[in-house]
Length: 157
Image (tube, rainbow, N blue to C red; front, side, top):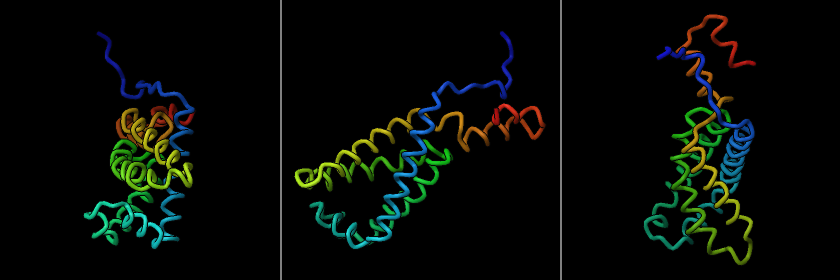
């Protein structure tokens, strides 16, 4: 059995998934910035969800949702801790899609569609990971391969 070199590990994920991951991360960042700009709107959405536990703790949830969207969006966009960031985002998007946006589906279905699409993409990247063009892959390759010139050249092809 031939011994495999850590630098020869290939990630067969297509490049278009990398673009999709970056768009997903930027979308989450954009939503976090819109939540920062309108915290009262997010707080009222949480209070109108009908779940009393969430309504009573809406101030804390506004902070947590905004923080996790901001940090998770940044991490997903650059491909750092992509699986973990996606897993943390999934409960937030389940709540957004099925408790908040489903009530306003008759008025504006675009928010519901966006929430469900982002939820599906988060599930995809929680399973698939960040891909070959990511900070995760760079650190994994560089750290395991060492700082020699030839070992990190494969990442920058």
